[in-house]
Image (cartoon, rainbow, N blue to C red; front, side):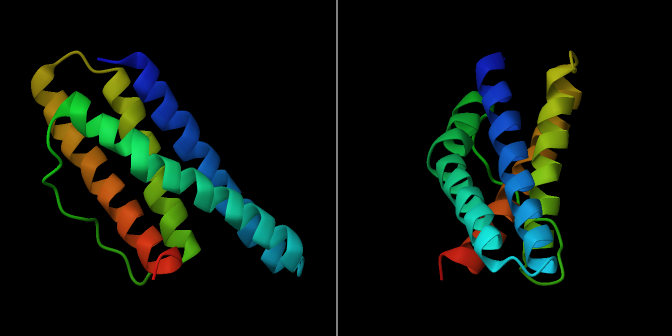
Length: 126
């Protein structure tokens, strides 16, 4: 397993989720400028994930043929949730030694990645 890739996935995905969370908090505080700043930073990170890291994960673990997790409708909180699910699955994979369990958790990782990509595209790329 490529520890550098998994570290990059966890770090970048966590940072993106944190940016979107800060964006939501700024919006709730009425600070639109700060909200936009954090939203743009989060968008930039997710674009990098989509165009680089997520593709590298597929190269590492095999083709991503999984679906998406259920969610109500695309919004920042659902995106944050999906990004956190990516981090949890990636972190779990790091601690696994059994290849059968690793394959199961990889499916969970792929569904979380697909969900995050789908929500992101609906929110920011339409």
